[in-house]
Image (cartoon, rainbow, N blue to C red; front, side, top):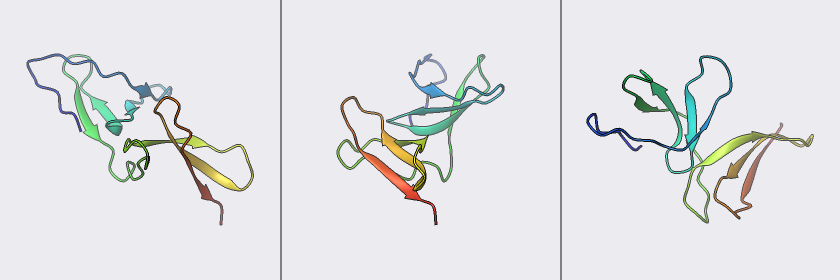
Length: 92
């Protein structure tokens, strides 16, 4: 996890949860993480048990997306441009 230096402001481009009060973020280098104490002095905390799968081609974290077919619950996808790697989890 990229830990910010307290004296040097940082900006990390990331996807974020769109629910009110949610501070979970995702980027493919850090995976899922939570931002706390924003905006005064943000701290980044890893989300335990979530960052489990990496793309075998790019070695970056996968993000979870909902599946639209009836054979699987959700899919893990690579966020790197032009990478089509997907891993599905089947409903048992």
